[in-house]
Image (cartoon, helix red, strand yellow):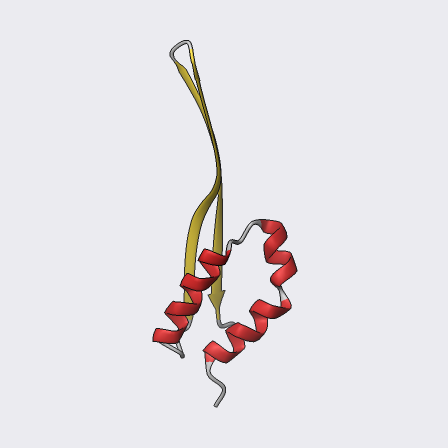
Length: 77
């Protein structure tokens, strides 16, 4: 029986470039990896992180923009 942790590592290498373009950071990948090492046959693991944030305040107004990246790894049938 193949452990989900091994499959996760294979997929992470395969999609490293695509995840980089989306904005998935090494911290998110390490958190997911740690979860899957603790529970190797977990059905899913996910993490999210705000990677970019912009805040501008002027004249009693505030403009805020942020980019949130969420990484979800799960088994599919």
